[in-house]
Length: 174
Image 1 (cartoon, rainbow, N blue to C red):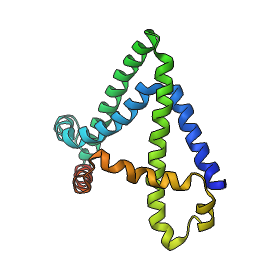
Image 2: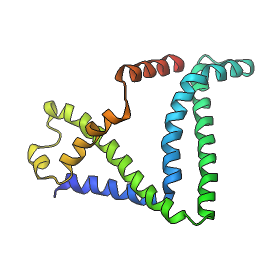
Image 3: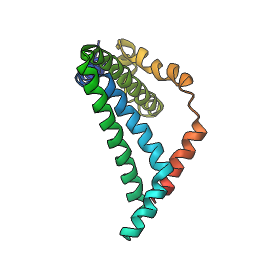
């Protein structure tokens, strides 16, 4: 166990506590809101832009439309999730919701850490950011570095489609 394990361990403990506090419904809603917010803003910010152009005239209206659409979707998903969370608590499933929230949050954070580690690994060959002896003596380095590559094939993730979506966002926001 080394400093890398301590840092990652603290992050994962924070994930567990946060997930337990929020519950599964809110944790799922947070992720769903982010994904739907981005996709919805890409798809519908043109409509928002048309409506905004009737009321204001600004050179960067595309970016404002994207942000307004994104925020609207995120807020709507969050409000729906809060209502569902209250319903779950009312029918005495709050503890189960919190336990599964902790588990989901832990997995979500581990996945993000795994992606960050993959990015670091590509730079590490050149800059040696994490010394080899630290990687070798770490308990968490190997399992976390292998987590995202194992999960990605099951997400049906298309790199070309993702690139196109990012380009659409950039075009909308400029």
